[in-house]
Length: 81
Picture (tube, one colour):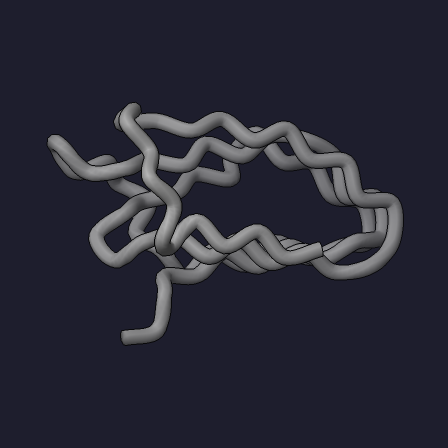
């Protein structure tokens, strides 16, 4: 699964994503300047990697991800410029 938010028109400062991924790989691409938090993601044998800043920036988009990844992998990264 790939979710690219880098060119999306988002009129809110926070986007909440609930993700359940038993197997496989998910990538979430956030716009430049956006932050992300994955503290609400539970993983048994999977892996969570967040390359976007974790600290919220005033006025910038913040992506809050929650859910379960029993064996799945999640990557959150900023867009490539």
